Image (cartoon, rainbow, N blue to C red; front, top):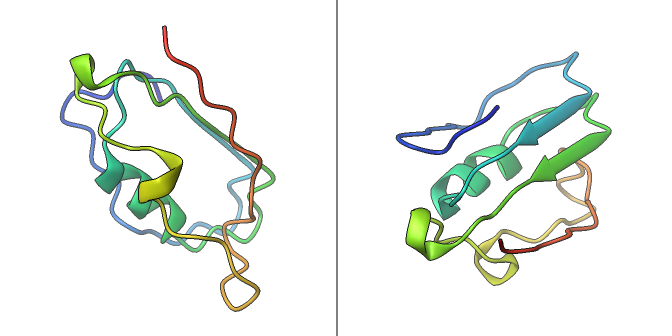
Length: 84
């Protein structure tokens, strides 16, 4: 996905999705919570471009739910965060 204006991502179930990339100038925390709350058992690669608050970004690793053994999907990821 590219672009974050009016982006919504409610929790979904998708059994075949292996890669999800969301490129935005500013990613909303609610979108991140929807992605993390989704049931994506085949997901292997997750890339989120956070952007800045100047473009609507209000998500940081501190605002995201934590991965836990009780909720293994989506898989825990190493987050690389950068701003432009």
